[in-house]
Image (cartoon, rainbow, N blue to C red; front, side, top):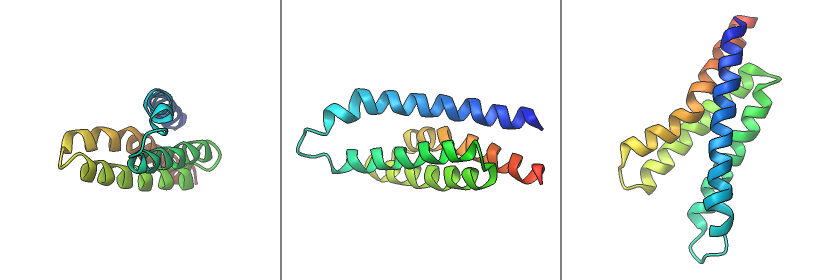
Length: 111
């Protein structure tokens, strides 16, 4: 059972590191541009996902629900932004969906 928890933590950590690198490389310099509404939305969603990941370390079930919810919203938003580029939306969605499902499974099995 603990293996599920650690796989969720490791995959979630890798997702957080990937998105934080994205935010540092693309997000922060892009905030000075005029058309930054989409970037602010993406960065807000990523911030909520990171907070959900941190919350999942202590409350696995609730944190997993947050990660699943925010990953679906992020996938749908990126599908809308990328003009129906399904592959890009699925990739970004799965990065937080997989750890979210694993945290949720561990939270239910732990009880």
